[in-house]
Image (cartoon, rainbow over all chains, first blue to last red; front, top):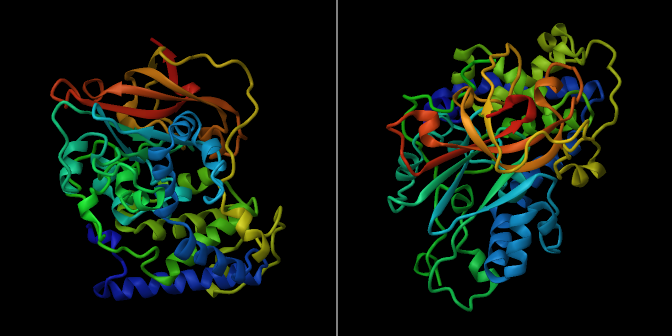
Length: 210
Length: 218
């Protein structure tokens, strides 16, 4: 990816230390002024490192694949539908699920910043926040898909959702063939982060360790 | 404002490259920036649209050279200074030198779990929705010097209202401290050819979420 997004590389060591010092100074100032509590900051970081991730979304997708009533509820009001799942944390308002079909493939982007459904997918990966993705997804989505090794049939409609407001989108990928009778938990292992952004497809049964 | 943050349709940035097994944060400071931003937002110091507007005001060469969390950090400094939460000499000294400005509330450890859920952007409607799903609309040709969520590529384009998301706080107003000014929000879908011309992929459809002031009947 573009090197400007890669300030953690050793060759950018001086830049990195400048940023590190700047952030450390800022935290000192905000703590001394009583604006932030370092223990609360630790807890937020820990949440994103250990608790919030694409497994949340995968569980939702697997449920939609096995439960037609839930699928319908998810497509009509995703926030409300997710709240009915005891084992997934509630998500805030404005979550919208969009369904892939043989006729239509959905892809999510935020061209203006990097809006992403954090609550169901965790923190966005660097490529999602990068200029190549933000610039090309709306103009050449099939080219972007090719970068991910995905080729769609020529006649499939490609629908790109630009997240320009506080609405957040989750792609409901197509359920792979050969998974009849699978449990929700097993199905969730097929649901990748990229398949829920629309830059990938769900894994096929042969693509995961049995 | 028309700056480099509005990237939709720009050419020349190259391929999308994926980092395998990417960690949540690449350096410790990235997590600290995210957490400080979250804490100041919880405290009511500024809104997310102020953060976005501050990033958009970075000089284009700075915006493009900075990483995602570096941009967050620069935007946070901007809002802290502009809103009087810190003074330039404090930033230079790396320590607090002046009395604090009062906050609405403080993000304490016990409040963190509750702060992980996104806040709602629904607001009380000020009038009936002007459009309904299926309506043909044209986006306005507008070029404000301040924050807007109507991307350049989608201005003055014919589309169809597909979804109505209720009445939301209006970023163009919030970012410039003019209050929520609640507006109806719609998903508007465009044919790829309407946006990119006759050569565009005929299977492409693009949607944006558009606030009612961005739209006219067509």
